[in-house]
Length: 186
Length: 186
DNA sequence: GCTTCGAACTTTAGAGTTGAAGTCTTCAGG
DNA sequence: CCTGAAGACTTCAACTCTAAAGTTCGAAGC
Image (cartoon, each protein chain N blue to C red):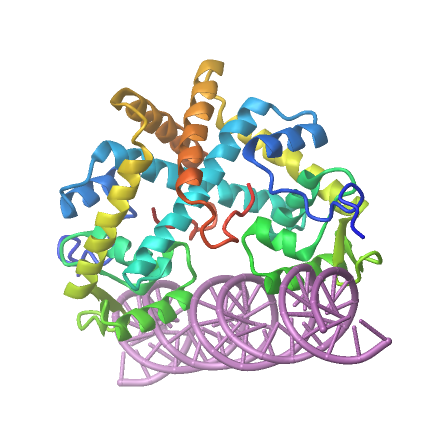
């Protein structure tokens, strides 16, 4: 026999609304409007990252690798950066960068060589294949993003972008990179 | 000798604007308005997570532990969930949950015991101390969040919340939890 | 020119995660 | 009963990240 009313065991996964209601129930001082913004933003961002992860996996790229490619492409022109600088931009320790570059170099996405002008430094450079991979990933991402914002008209998009940028500026001003390495890339 | 014009080596960390300009330069098909929204959202979310991490560290909590506490509190009433259910909600493998619960149980934040009604199951329950920690973290978080949204008036907050919720719904409809475990908590 | 300090990267040890295999319990047949 | 299959959790090996040394090179002082 089964008692559906007696052994709940696993409640259903909470929706955004249920979660906010639960927060309010457990912590009365909470402003539901604020929490709606914050929780929706976090959940949305997480789902987007999952979607990006699936897309890049399609190309044989991990999310970690994609981030390195992005940093190098954004740096422009010769597509060169040092491990330390890369680590700072991705929000990793230099040690982690060393290993990541190992892997990516062995896959042919980047090259690693000593800077002959200053032999303490190392230059990580995007390869043609790496750049190509980034372009493919970018094509997928832009389609996904366009689709995501499909329901918003131009005015709404602009407003949303402006408001988010204002909030970002506020956070960045309040946290002047306190302990270094906390940027991470988009 | 040093040639400031010859050996750039480390370019400055790119601002949001610089980054978007770089994307456009390298990938012409990009819609700058879409990218403004997406990049601002991602960067904002990342900075917020760093801020949360600092706050919870103040209380001797890791972000990982805070997420478990949140899931249990949101579940309500007796504050009980199984390891598997917790893993699903946090977006972890069951194996990782096992270890996390080990740590948290040894710190007194939760208890772990077999379900006598169904001895295959394990019940993880929030302790009084765990609940107290969650409340303290929540107090800090709500102050931070209120401060973050300070410059937005009520109308703007409502609009922002609604738009983000619309986008979230769109992502969730498009990704029907495809391979399980990808939710993670807010 | 030799030495010392500092900078940039790598190496090492330890914590945390994943994926796969293993254990224990329950349930349905035979 | 006894057996087989499925479910829930744990254990194990491999991988990735962090923090703290260690290594190598360059620059400044004597």
